[in-house]
Image (cartoon, rainbow, N blue to C red; front, side, top):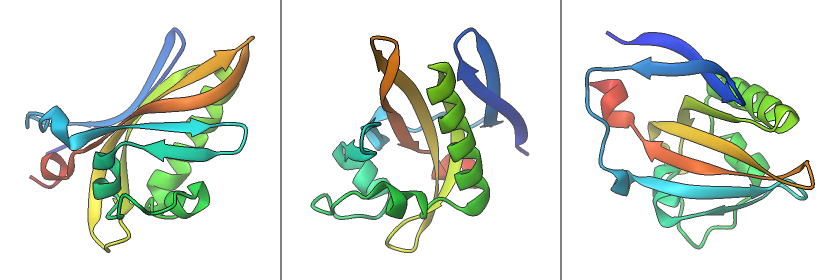
Length: 137
């Protein structure tokens, strides 16, 4: 049985929205790096994230289209955490449920941090890891 523990890491404060499981995490090879330029919300992903979202690596990345792939509860939480992290120049970690372009439902561990220039948030970046097996075990 999984216990839901809310968590978001913002500066020196920590809130958590994660599920604890006795299952070990999958190898890091199932994780990919991502980046979002806050000036125009353009995305860049490493190849494992395309696979996680069921997309061809040559697919164009449109943030609005990608956000729609998040299941409603995960989408709402991710958007709230994202906005707060940008506002407070912090970071967060969450588990999100997505429905990929291929129709498959998957779980991912999403970590995000904010990069700033002259005190102004300029980009979000982090790691997305497929944790579907851990969540469905």
